[in-house]
Amino acid sequence: MQTGISCVSAVKCNTDEALLHVLADMGASFDCASKEEIEAVLKLGVSPTRIVYAHPCKPISSLFFVKRREVSLMTFDTVNELHKVKVSYASARLLLRILPEQEFDARFKFEGRYGCSVTEAPKILQSAKDLNLNVVGVCFHVGSDIRNPEAFISILQQSRTVFDIARTIGFNMKILDIGGGFPGQKNTVRRFKEITEVINKTLLDLFPPEENLEIIAEPGRYIVASAFTLVANIIGKRCYKKPADVDRDGSKLVERYEKDRRKYDDLFSE
Image (cartoon, rainbow, N blue to C red):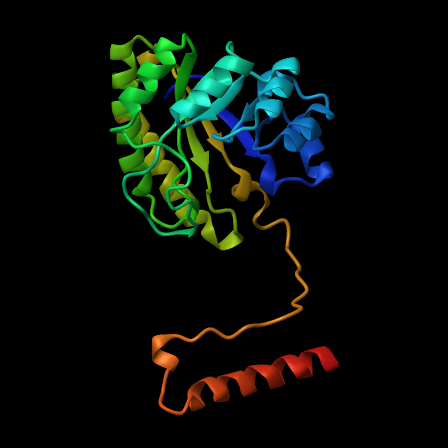
């Protein structure tokens, strides 16, 4: 297996200070999506070398902030982001975020908001080269609480292609960040094991040990999914019409509304 396998805990789902202290003491690194998350981790005494600024679209003010704090590893996915980095933090180490070509079943999908396609990668990487910026690797995220382990085969194949493209342009990339979203509930142990088996086999096939890559994983959900419960106060409700609900006199909608209204009236009257 590849050397330098790192655990990077995603702070956005691990913001509890006590938990962050435990993770920091255990030597975990941190995936931070904002200046505020980075500040919270640095206050724990965590070295800036253990932080990934993992948001592909960053305010210039935040780029100046992480430069002062020497948080150098960060993600990007557009040429526009490269120009911001060039102006504010030209010595940063960059991970190109790529977009999965296929969409797999996941509890939370990013739906194309972040990442570039493989066909866009050559232009973006060439722009980075022209700007004399340092692209050190590739990152991706298949979606949170992924249900299909096969999702990693496709995106790792894309990653291999981007590594090869980067080499022809002149980059010697040494980091592969495989993202997070791994299931962490108590009843998902078997699925987690299936996912890790697929990842390990595919990595060995596509990225031989002699390449000496650092593989980063971001097990945020995996760490806290069964440890915390989110409680929300429902203060309102709205009914949406669906094709199956539509009838001539609207009786189905009225019947459903009255049933739900009585249920919530009983709940709040207790």
